[in-house]
Amino acid sequence: MRVWVRLISFVVLFALSVVIVGCSQDLPGNKKISARVVEVIDGDTVKVKLDGEEETVRMLLIDTPETNHREKGEQPFGSQAKRFVTKLLPPGKEVLLEKGENERDKYGRLLAYLYLDEQTSVQQLLLERGLARVAYVFEPDAKYEDFYRQLENSAKKKSLGIWSVRDYARADGFHPEAVEAEAQFVASKNSAVYHKISCSAAKQIKRKNRVFFRTEQEAIASGRHRSQSECRANTR
Image: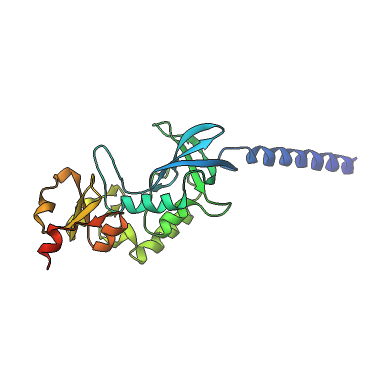
C-alpha cells in the first residue's frame, strides 16, 4: 500500500512540475519574439514592426545620452550611441525581443531586451563600449542587472565613452557641464558642423543648442565635420 501511495505522489509531483515549467516558459520576458527594424530613434529606443504593427521599443536597464530631447537637447555621446545602433540595426533587419514583465512604460513604449541573435543584446554592446549606463532598474525587470553592471564597470575602468569624462555619467543621469569644462570643440545640435571653441562662430551658437566635445575625435564620432572657413583660419 505504501509503495502505491509513494508512486501516486511521485506521479502527481511530476505532473505539477511539468505544468509549472510549461507556464513559466509562457511568461513575458522568458521567450524571444521576432521583429523587424523600422528606424533607430536614439541610442536606447528603436521603432520595429511586430505582428504587422509598428511598435516603439525602449531598451530595458540602460540609458544613453539624449540626441534631441525637448528640454535637454543633444547631450555629449548621444549621437555616437545613436550612430552605433543605427549601424547595427539598418531598416528591415530582423531582431529578437525579450519583453519585460512590465510590458510598457508610461509613454506606451514596449519595454524589452533587444537582441541581434540568441545571445547578443544591443544593451550589452552599448555598455561594453561605454555608450550607455545601467539605469531604470525596477523589479521584476532586473534579471540581467548583475551582468550589465559587470559590463559597465569594465567600461568605466577603461574610461570608454561616457566614462572618459569625470562626473559626466552619474546615478541621476548625464551632466553636460562636466564635458563643457574640458571642451575644445562645440557644435549646434541643429548643425552637422563643429567649431573650435575659441572661434567667434562657436560663440554665436545659442547656449541651449550647444553640444560640447573634449576632443576632435569625439566631434567626428558624432557624425559632424569641421568648419571649413573661420575655425581653420584661426588655428593656423
